[in-house]
Image 1 (cartoon, rainbow, N blue to C red):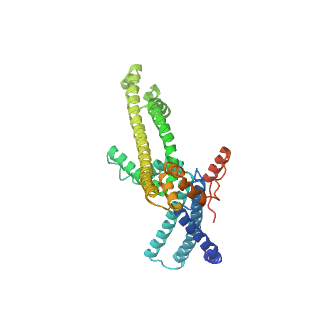
Image 2 (image 1 turned 180 degrees about the vertical axis):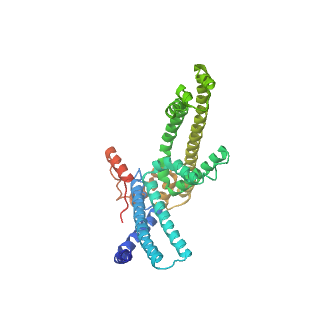
Image 3 (image 1 turned 45 degrees about the horizontal axis):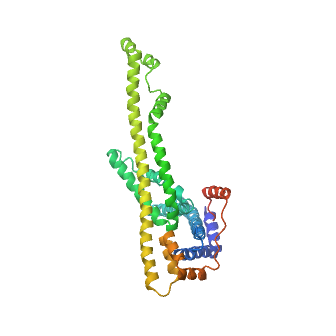
Length: 363
């Protein structure tokens, strides 16, 4: 392990310039992205800005992955050496554990940010699952409270997740997602309706597989019953009556569980779509007010202001800007070298999608 520490120190020392260069490059590009340097009005789909944001997110993930890998090996080796050759204080052990947990959380956050940028719709759909995993961590403490309060706790966690999601994403990512939400809501409505209506069939299949329904063999094998009771229970009418009520009870319970799950998923998607719509509409109103003020009151129209209002206002503000001759001249002057990237074939899009899912950080 001592050799591991020396080797890591040597590698970091001789690659410090490259590491520092990559970190500076990341922060420099992040600054340009925040200033909308890659957001062009000639690029209708804003794919240039999108690709630059994803590229910077990949750089962040690579930097943090390197930090996590090095800190895990370095601190783990030091911890092992100190623990075997020296007496360690509990404070030092706790401090090392906190550093390792912080490194892991930092790596997870960078990976989640990359996933949000690369697969926005997929992450939006998976947020209820993430909320349920977080809720499950505290489920032992919430077991005795009423179902309605448990649903409220789940929706509160989902709301927090969706709020962070909407604040992390740029506005043009959210506008593209807003169209997909309509399709997701329609599919979700159809799926929940079909699932709830099919609950009696599912219950019957479940009961048959689990062998819960009453049969003559089950009664005959039960040694606790007398012969008179067995003869009574094996009567066809009695067995059909008992199985009817068992089926009815299980169907009711199963339908209630499905209804609760569908209500939680549907309401969480509704909350998420509302938060997305609120951020988009709020930014659009603010951008339109500032754009009208710029066009009416100011003599000189600045390109940076037009880009900012187009970014915040979306297609409506872009159409106002492009329909104004003076604004159009300003855009032509500043975006003369800009050429939108060619359209990607559907086959290449599918290849790119699977590559995103199988992405491995590069140290």
